[in-house]
Image (cartoon, rainbow, N blue to C red):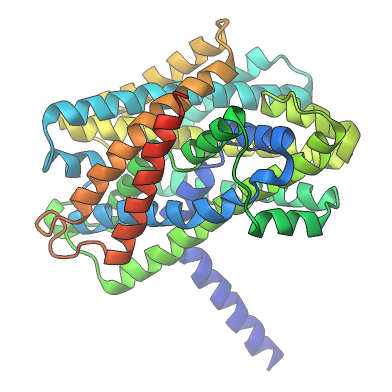
Length: 423
């Protein structure tokens, strides 16, 4: 009897883990080093006052990512290819060029964050680590096939539990935390509103839209559906599995965001360390306040999420250009088979490394990334809504009314966020 129960539990765990894929990876990639820095700054500057944002961004992010997933699964195309069927070529190229610029800046900031974290752990120069990480990630992207990359990214997502553990290590005041989580207070002052905009822009990011849809196409190719005709449409079961996957991935992403804000609020903010600009600043300040374990968990987490996020950032831009220009594409292709596709990944990585060896401030770089994403995201969301509602593109499997309403609310919120960036 006991053996039967153990087998049943093992089978259930295996089925649940196997059902997780693109949604989990995309959600976890959202908590990249620049995102960790943004959430850390939010906790350090404003304490627990912004904990409630995690409850708001989860359903909004889940609805957007599921709509992108549905487009990829049903149309058999990535997001850029789907846009080409409905919008002028100029709009598509402006969108993907802005995506490439924002992603490259983000990669530079992420490499800097990872290198700083690695320097703290090993005491080797961060400049060395920037090059090591850049070469290593690009080599893995070119050499490994999609299945291996997806599997590696899936396991890397578990490193995010470091932030959950670090929050419990500091033993926060749960009464205050829960109150500020479920009883929201509106931001007071210009800085607080800008931080709210930054949280929205970091959590609901354009590169995730493209990556989610593209991964769906790659999943189908991996299953042997190599032609567009074979990929058209999706069964109810496939859509149900992806809803679970996206729900878990986005919940996990926002849970980690919540615990990063919680950790820095009850340590840095309460100790008066509000002048935090990077993840490195947060990790160094955490050490005397929360102990070596919390600081180490935080630092290791930065490296892990960087390894997870950078392939997503460079890959999403490469897929976007390949779909727009009709290049051969895919992480299953060899370098010789998809030179232009991998060329975009290499160019983005090299530009990011050069940025790290100049005097460009990572904080200012992240600000401009937020500006670009803040302007680009609402227009992309509007375009996604139009495509997801088109019966011809979606082969009669358009998004549900509830999904459309939630994404429309997200679009309006992001438009407001874009306007707030200028005030």
